[in-house]
Structures are given as structure tokens and as C-alpha cells.
Length: 274
Figure 1 (cartoon, rainbow, N blue to C red):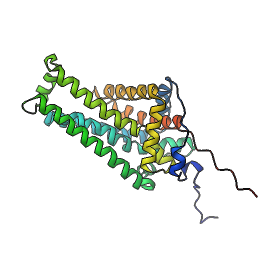
Figure 2: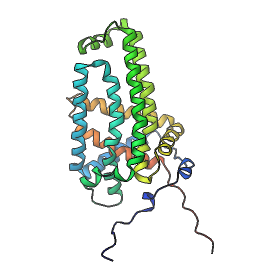
Figure 3: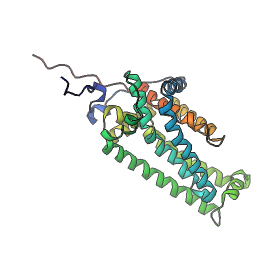
């Protein structure tokens, strides 16, 4: 009938109970799979380049914000870099919606991608809070490393000098270890959590635990995936962050395909007996 909504909800879009999510099987993926996710991400970007470039501009702006902070308060740079791991996945929510629309053979729309967070705003808010706490702890730990290593907080020039001076090897190791620990926690918790919240309408805790399970069951592949993301982002940042215009949305689409490869949909319940 004309008054009825034309877009019916697919089974994958229905809310999934936390208990079924926590028992959901995880796929074991090969070491070559992350490269395939990037390839699929590139394909999605080419199929919807205008919407992708909009999000690319957002990543580009984030890169320049990072540069401004480095020039004024370099001690906060490592913690702000976590902002890419915090804001990036939430910004990529629209990219996940675009990939989801492409899979469903729907025409992607920028407006729909920008509003993708609305049906899951409570779960997204809780998950954002968890990541924010981790980032705040990262920032505090970074400041402590600086405080015990230097008499005063260095400026941008002295920070580069400190990082390139082998006499400060203890500081360099401590700084990198702190960064690796917190980056690993954030990546493990959020690797597939946000696309899962979007797709299956699960709560934040169930999504985060499923992401951790996926990483624990595929440690080498997920470590390679995290390294690949880091390499692409660093390479995209080098030419004045211009590469983020394309690399940002491609990695966002690729993360959707990583989620699709790692999480097996729950087996539907059998029909009631007659």
C-alpha cells in the first residue's frame, strides 16, 4: 500500500541480542585478507567517489589539526594521534553505511550516511565514552613520560631533536611502548565494533567484546591489518595530508569489509513446531 514504508528492514539490520552476539562464531581469516579488504575499499570508493571525498576532506582537516597541535603543544601529539583512532571510526560510520548500501544494491546518499548514527546513538555514545577514557589515559601517560624525561615540556623543534637523539633512548622506548599499548587497546576494542553496531544494532559492550574476540582469534592477521592501516595513514600524511582525501575513505570502506569477513551472521532460530 502507498502509505506503507517501502524500505523494509533486512534480517541483518534487526537488533541482535547480546547473548547471541557473545556466542557468535568468528571467522579465521588468512594473512592475505587485509589486502583484499583494501581492494574492496578502493572499489567502494570508486563506486561512490563524491561521498567518499566528503569524508576524505574531514580526514584532511583532522590531519592539519594534528599539525597545529604539534607546533603549539608537541607533548600532546601522540595522544591526539589517538584521536584518529577515536574520531576516525566514528567519522567512518558514514562510509560503513555507504558500503552497506552498495552491498544491498541501494544508491548511496550523503544524507543517509551522515544520519547513520541516529538509530544506534545510545550504543555509539557508550562506545565513544569508553574510547575517550582510553585516550585520556593515553594522554596522561604520555605527559608523564615527558615529565620524567625532561625538565620542561619541549617545543616542536626540541621534540624532533629529542626523538632523533640516541642519548634519549630511554625516553624514546618508553614513549613508543606507551603509545603501542594504548593504540593496541583502542584498535583491538574498535577494530570491527562500530560497523557491527551499525549493522546488527548490538550494544557497545557486546560489540567491543566481539571485536576483541576477533583480534584474539586472528592475532597475526589483525596485527598485520593494524600495521597496514598505520603505514597507509602515515604515507597519506606525508604530502601535507593530501593522501588522506583518498586513503581515509578507502580504509573506512575496507574496515566494513573486514567486519564482514570476520563476523559470521548468527544462525536464524528454527521455526516453531506446529
